[in-house]
Image: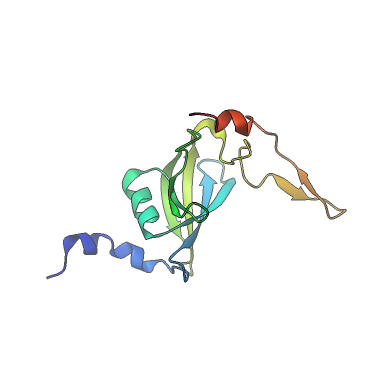
Length: 137
């Protein structure tokens, strides 16, 4: 007889995890479809995201789970979780609390556009100074 907890997590087996046990995750704004950010998830992050209804990612730099908004307060409420055709990208449809997804204080991490001269230019404003966001002690 199989363990009920194992059966409950069988849906995670459809994901094509990379060699480090990670999958790319795109956060897309609920209602507008705007891409807010890309991050990484491991099995535990994806499982916790589904259970909690809030985005949880894997921080490669900190080597730990990262609950989006844990230091900034800008959580992501998850409305839908989708898997692409190859199973190697997860799409989270989220409500971005506070309107800021990026650590730069912008709405989206994709705030730079390539211009005709081959330079990158900021096309979205800083909504809040990052020092003010992350100075919470």
